[in-house]
Image (cartoon, rainbow over all chains, first blue to last red; front, side, top):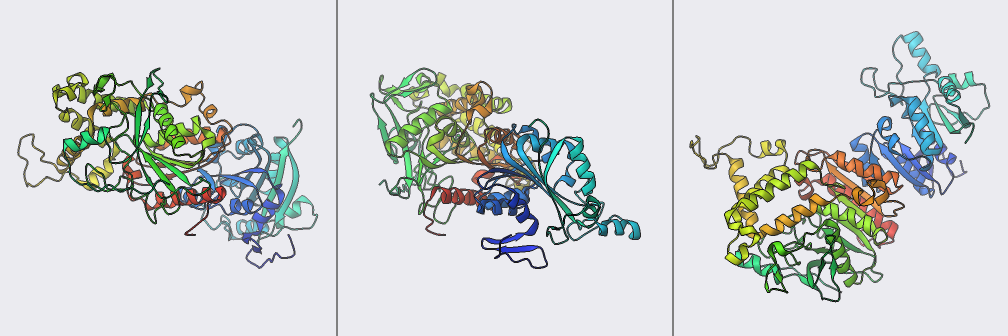
Length: 220
Length: 400
């Protein structure tokens, strides 16, 4: 983050080119300028717009028709599609990076989706809400009900999120499918990175979400 | 530069129609025997002519030209009063001052397709070799033939690269054919309510229409011009059947339901008791006033033959390999003629070709015809796509 960037409490960072979410800035920082990026579950295209200001060739897939139409109306190259069913149609190595921002937990087959991300892109950037976050644990432990946070406000019966995991779970999944973790960050409630080098269990407890830069492990 | 030509002459008669076939009130590009049109069927069409309209001015670096491709029964009169029917242009919702395609910013070209009957050479034109109407002696044409002819017109106008090619339905097929055949000449492509191939169901409907035309005793094996008549009953039936496919059940129900026309009780006859019946009869009869029956046969056939993948070894993505054109594909939820699944197959192929593509499905109950109607969400997307492409192309933004 440069010196001009200001971080107020709501997690929105003001830069020379506009206001952006702190977690989006972190993701954008992980992408090399000039690369080709597919944002899966791109919502209303905020991250894609940020990437475009950095000279990155961005494409998007979004499930909701309203989201797609707003993206296209912003001039972004976004198509309507479903991460669970449409990624198989993308050829190998089509992109430098494939981003899955706050969408993994809404997919039916997170493992298959993750494998597809790293087939289509040379690298993948995945961020997701951490169900191991201490507030989540407290809500279940003390309150006795399914956790809800500012970022995940829906009730258990009407949420699109069906596969929650913790940072620890995700790290284990990456190990299982031999994905190499090039960079890992835990973010606090405001989307700000926890800059400390801490053991996994601490991140798993204090990170509200995790952001991971992944690449193909082993024989790549 | 070629200026705006508006053609107001709102009288309808069969004479007007037949006059427009060879002597259109549009601008005309004549291609002599030295410039034949090589058709897919192996015939060289020569000489031939293309009638076209233009709106706006070509800019100094010739980078703002937009080609609009018309649908099956459309023509070049996209944004001016139609010389035969006296009605407004068929796409005035999209083209015009303050519209997504504003003549203040773009040089807009729309030509009548080869095989049509509004001034471009087709089966209703005079065959110069015989001095008589072509009729069924006219060679069978394809969508690639139409596009090849358009490319010759674009050459004639001195334009190397089109800023955009825009079209819906059969026009959308031409848009896709343009990008597959001349990828370097198309900067951006807006393909609406179309497909990369005509489906079996659509071919079936077209066959129904053609059989209706050919079953009319006035058709005379396509030689009706020699008899001074027109198979208007068969063509009207064809149009009625086709018109149903352009709508949706929901739209028909909303518009007409089971309401009666000018009466309280059924007549127990085959009069048009229901409003929907009289609406269809009106659609059929007004269509025959402006359209040639043989043209209808040739153009529906051209759509039936269309299959971009087949021309590329059955692999659709190969048609667009390495393409730089920016695409925007739009479909409508209630379109059962060109359903969203067809657009999605196209988008998958474009993605596989690594093309820059946007795809939006618009929710509407108005069926295939929605692309011609006032659908604000569709216009917002078209405007934004063209503006963003214009920005990338370096077109000056006169109105922000």
